[in-house]
Length: 604
Image 1 (cartoon, rainbow, N blue to C red):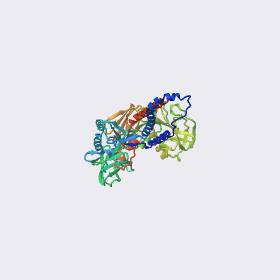
Image 2 (cartoon, rainbow, N blue to C red):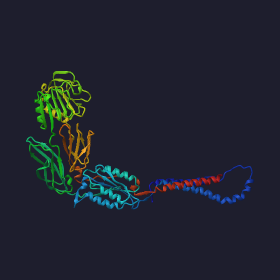
Image 3 (cartoon, helix red, strand yellow):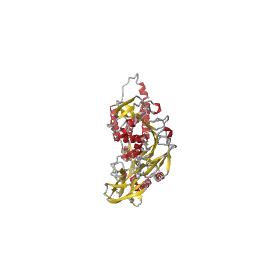
Image 4 (cartoon, rainbow, N blue to C red):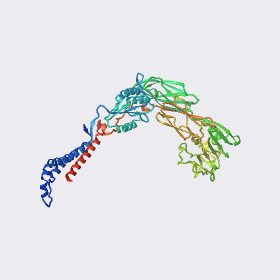
């Protein structure tokens, strides 16, 4: 037996103090009486009660002494060694690297499950088994199970992920489970090279196998109408010659054999000479290595998103040439509103012509107008050459870095809009370009000057400004197309979207809700995902994105020393006598009652 709080025995100092009190206590006291006659009559009775009187005084002393000893014993917190029985808490690494195959056809995760089933056989009725599945969001797979069958049922349901391992969160869950136990042991089954410590035992499943990982892909278009596609390849465990293939839209187009030094990132460059655009570029390797999930890497949305536009203008030259230069616009040009079909386009451009009612199913650009949509009247007109300046307070990425030092605007009108209108360009103190989101979610941008009253179309900034406004007005459903498994992709539900679908890798499409502005998608599988939106008035749009294995899971990196804070009792393997404290307190209470009874009978 041990005591968890030995300082509680300081209460035993009350024993000598009690003895000193009894030594210095006066044994008689003087009392005046009127006669001694009564003492003579009680002599016989006093002789008969004398032995009992001595026992009664000793009984009070021993009761007080026993009470001091019991109080010090309780304060010292007696504990006993837990023995063979203990509560088991297991953290199981369920990250992508645990799907590596070191030898045979058995993954590290499957080996860990086999070891867990053997460990579960030690689960006893008076002890519990807790399993924490450590992936990107660790959870309890089983909590305080008391039978082997309950543990095995939980093991049959769990699976390994393609994401990372959040060790910190898993350790927090282990600490919370340990707080409910008086004698707990924590085990961590992983392949990340962690070391065992005082209060946690680590089983390491990493054996440094050979694994080829494709870790990145980039593309750029050259002046010779060709594409440079650069991939990053690493051979973990040994130097190797590797054949890397390239697919464009699922069609194999090229392959290269490269030498990859051990544990060193190596680049492979493909030059594709073709004028046709493609949606997805993918590099891949066909080899038997430890982890198959990182044997391909895709780059999605290589093709610039196409859009349809309607241009209503009597002098469309500047705008028509600029839109054609963008290369991804299907343009319809008309000179009057009577000939225009204001339905089913992504973008509507009105140059010097103001419709009575604007379209509601696409973004809007207005040039050379003297008033804003929604009845907002513009301000004073100016007829003086002025250089436009970018509004520095406007948070538009496309306006940053634009310089209009050589640009002059001769005639313009000061735009005055409500709080929903944001200025982008100023001439002096007058806003000449403003943008806002109209009811229904469509974006509208208004230029208060005619392009023919400015030399802006002759400047390099003209195409950059127009392209930036169009990209801003026609937002994509996804801001990025390269994710890591475990992350959440946020799909923007564009205005007028009637139905939204998500296609998971290797699975059919599922319909998503369009009742919210952004729809989150948790990424749990490696591969290419597809998002498709449909509209009533125009063709649907789609976008693809790729989710890859976390880079740290592609190689067995060295882990740090793990420390998990458990309760004080479990760190010593001791078990407190919690049940006996009630009986000790009851005994102390009985002693107090006996002492009080003896004292009462002596006095009265």
